[in-house]
Image 1 (tube, rainbow, N blue to C red):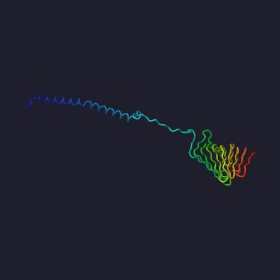
Image 2: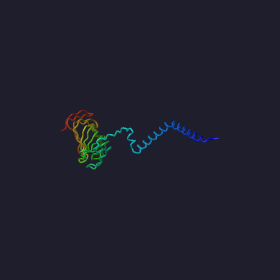
Image 3: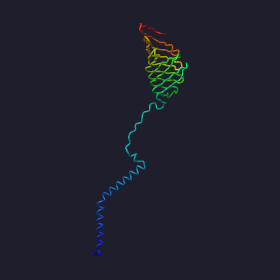
Image 4: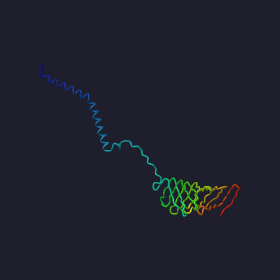
Length: 217
């Protein structure tokens, strides 16, 4: 048999149990609410593009550009024909146009293949070279070597070559090796397309048959 006073008692008991349960869950609920708040903040920062700016940024090292105001090229090639209709071919591992004089091209590790009027080829190499496009001339510097197979090999530090007529001159000490002997001079000139070679200033020559010393005008 029930009484009218039992209903309110059970209602108070259920309310008390719910209050106790909520008090026990309160810390967890506050943590969940905190995480939800952080998630909303992070989501807002990402959408606003601000999150990336707050992250630590790695240092970016930009490459150094040599001669930024000059036109630079790798593996330079110049080719054409001279006054005798003989082809010439000039290459370099690196080259750039002069910033002040557009007709000048500076080259490193230059190698040229030239031909005498009769067609015989010879090679010219140098560590550095400057090509004048107007004058069709080459100024060579550093370990200059002029070699014609079976004829001679000449070594010097500086030389000037007129590409159109193949004339060459040098005012630096020259050492020449040729069949049967060696020649040392303080200058050299090649004219007539390389057919004539003159040694200048304090010439010394040694051959397998003997030694000669003298000077040329």
